Length: 76
Image 1 (cartoon, one colour):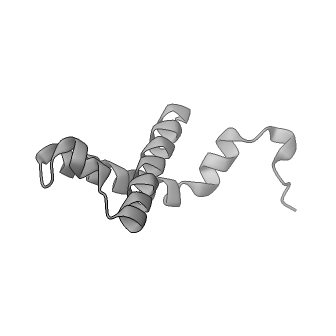
Image 2 (image 1 turned 45 degrees about the vertical axis):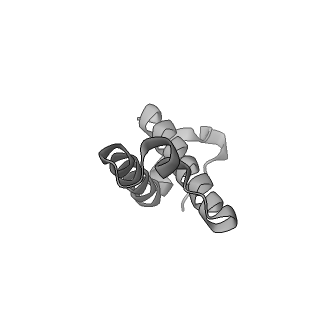
Image 3 (image 1 turned 90 degrees about the vertical axis):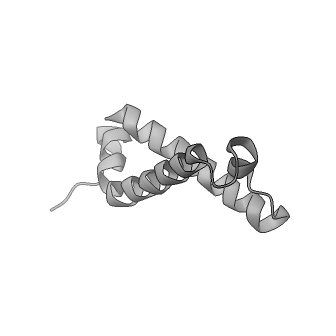
């Protein structure tokens, strides 16, 4: 499961950097590299979106998987 966490995190970072470039420089790196409107760019955008959704839904579970047991807060 940690492998999926890492892949999702990398995709979220790629998406964030791409949106940053779009916002700052009006430059879409994914479209530049893979072609605007191409099937490959659509796949990348879809994977980035799914990775963001995964990260949002799995937030607490990811923390539990990656935190050392002594750092996880105890519940009463």
